Length: 600
Image (cartoon, rainbow, N blue to C red; front, side):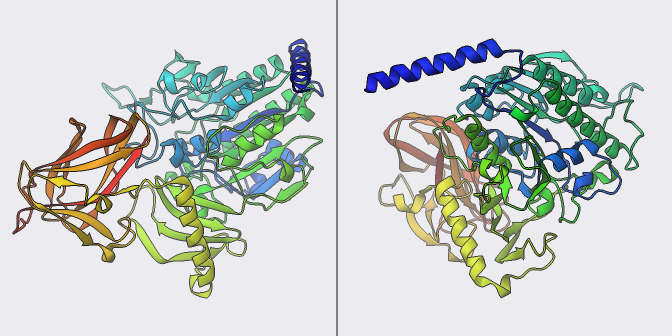
């Protein structure tokens, strides 16, 4: 019976594959899985569409899309800036899992001089669908690594047309009387076909490429990811749209994107595949408010891009699928861009990637058959949890302004807002609902246990004190209770009374051999020493200077990638000396060690 079932499944799959091959270029059949299109804008605010309340930006195609589909009022991007947001959408995982967040990369987003990108072992929506026979295409802004190993064609997409990072990068300053310009390249797959890209033509060219792809693959199934370059600044509209909007150039840009949406929906209808295609429209993060009239609007929400206030991460989202998604529906359910990968997999019955996911299948919600499966969401800024939402309640543990970034403001107790009653986050009600605050705290701790931490070590140095050895100085466990929240736990390992040249050896256990990135967590103060790290005899990274004007945590300090063997490895700290600004230490030099973190 088992061999019969296997043979039957093989014959059935072969037959379906033949149907698919014979249907290429023809309207999709009932046996063909649904197509998927994700339209992703850049820096569009929650209040920038007519259907979301904007009084002067005209978006008739998106308005009609909402009338014929479902409009979400509580939909979130995975992050408040470009790179991590895109990583979250395409992988269905909190961006911290991919490593593309500040604290694990040099900046908040990737820049043209960065040498990294979305790790090749991450599984994207394109890879999930490609495994089910989908044609896949990426168009527009990528911003997940500009080197060939990280571009869309290495991440499951058959083809790519677009710019590899933000359109305000690669700026060439004015010189010899010539004006400055943005030297951003336009790529076809991995080849530069135009530099600088003519940004006045990008929305039109992206749209033409998208409609060609739809016509070519009308036999289905196909996946199209169109990530518009704008309304990120600098703003450019084609001559056909420039000067049309009462909202000025920003409105021109949004209205041209609306035109693009109309052309794509028309192409689906003309190809006879509208009822076999789900289209999702949303944005990567909130509006860049400091750009003034060149930035968008978060409507009634607080703040914008770069922050974990609602205006930074709550986005417009419209889902359209004639005959499947009920027309004219408004969903108040909690949902995120990370839910799109599980939803895409459910469209065609694809297996989910064999790795932890943070998204949920939204198909029952989209079909009007049930509520949102999500009731908890964590707001990251870089590699820190700043806020968390459970149901209608949102707690802010840390707040910080953006552009320019102000100081971190820690809140204990956290700020608490009831978002369904107070979406603008005006009225802190933490004192009235301490039980809700505690519930969210517990959920955040569970989240850390599931996702992991990068701001705190996974290997506590004080737990290794009995196994550590020194050539000079002594070790002691130091209580750090007064600094709760800045260090992991309430204790640290202190190496005191040491002299330059002394070495501290700590055993480092790893479950399997491989290449790991090593992070160290230390204390800085006026009298702390400078150390050099090595593992298994190989020097790592830069010197770690322990000087600071006041007692503070270093947070994670990367010492780079190192080959580790399964079992015990030797981590050595060598005391080099002391910063010239140091206040001195009467009993010799001092090093405060919180712990270490390994990331494979």
